[in-house]
Length: 604
Image (cartoon, rainbow, N blue to C red; front, side, top):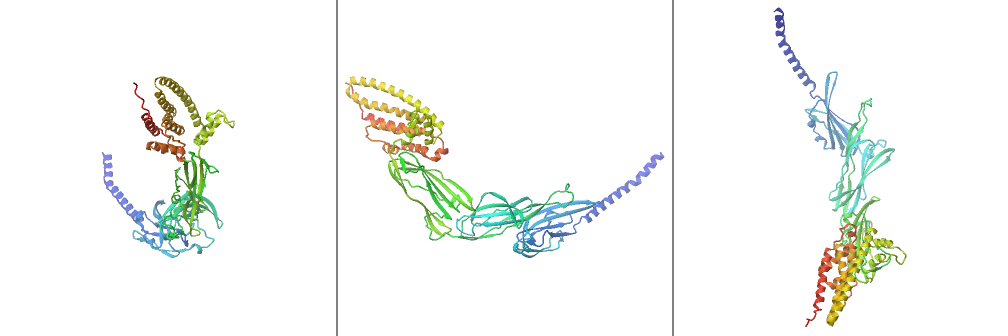
């Protein structure tokens, strides 16, 4: 009992005393902590003094406490400096049970002009830093032995241009330190279109004995308004790597430093269009503009129905691809023209943009004779001599000879004979036909096999037709002499079915080459039956004689597919349904004309 009592007597008086002492200790610690970490000092320093114009100046503002990141107001700096990237960091450290807290702002400044400046006192929670005196000198006033780690240069191809005259801008970033990251602003100019040319170029250059890494960007600028304009200075913002100040390289890490470099602004004078420039001509200000043409052969002798490819190339320096004018070729009677889609190219040569337009025209003569291609001219303004000039292609005369199917027959002549006059085999003839028709030898070989099958088919049909004709001939001769005369017309109609059936088969198989070959033979026999007395030597004459709209449209589509370069290069294959329907309509119309003139007499 005494032991238990004594224990209770010891515990009761010490419980409230210890709790009270613990509470007092906590409150004292909190009060002491508030007194220790209260903001008491703000400092401001710059990393260099004096500094060069357009060179970044790093202003570091430090507060000896953990404060809000937005507590610093940098607006007082805008009157004399360009304020760039701003970074904020907080740090807490403890040494010998003493805790220190620091908040640090790093602000990149660029002086607008050289001279003497005072960075004003900056306020953070009622605490102010001391003003900092700063000297900024121009680049030419700086000591030649002092070189910057990073600088930006910009240069234009010319400072005075005409409206819509293209000029090039070259921006180069030079740096002799290690870059961690960076961004270079794109150029801007009021009333102008700006387009980057190519990829960034990288090179090395030694300036005053120091090696620099150079990154170059090139832009094409086309001003759309006249007047005097200022091309905004390029601004580089990034971070560079700095070696750590710690002695132990094993535990140290590379530190970064923000930098901003401003280039020089450039002034450009844009002149208006001269008053004496023709109003009906497209405005083309350039150093040089040329026209060049190419033909498939050296001579000027061509054949009716043979496609002629004329290639016209327009080359201009100082114009973009979008500014190149349209190349047009005037058509003439008996000569159809099929223009292809123009090919555009642009390259940078000797710091000048050279643009080129290549236009192909497929010319298909429908009549024999001489055709005069008129002179072609493009008006342009020479920015070197300030004179109006005209780039011309002289008039040209081409002679077209009559030769029905000469192009196709010469290409496929080796298919009909195993060995031609030169001793070449049939396979060589197939290869030559593939070259002339623009198809591969495999495709021509397939056509050759199909052609042989069709020949046997036509021969069988012809034999059956001949047999039927003989039977009908002798039968009608016995009954009536008049019927014999009329049967000759019917026989011709039946014979014309050879080409007609073959033509329908070619259309069903979508074989454009074979269909074009069979058109004229079918029409000749069909019109001979009608005793029209008209001869058809080419497609154009066939269209004039038949005068059926669907038939003419289908033939034009067929020729466009065979002779147009763009269609051969990648357009869908030819579909013969439209031509097949048109042929059936024409054949029916001509057959009705035959029947209307061949009414047989009634039997007694």
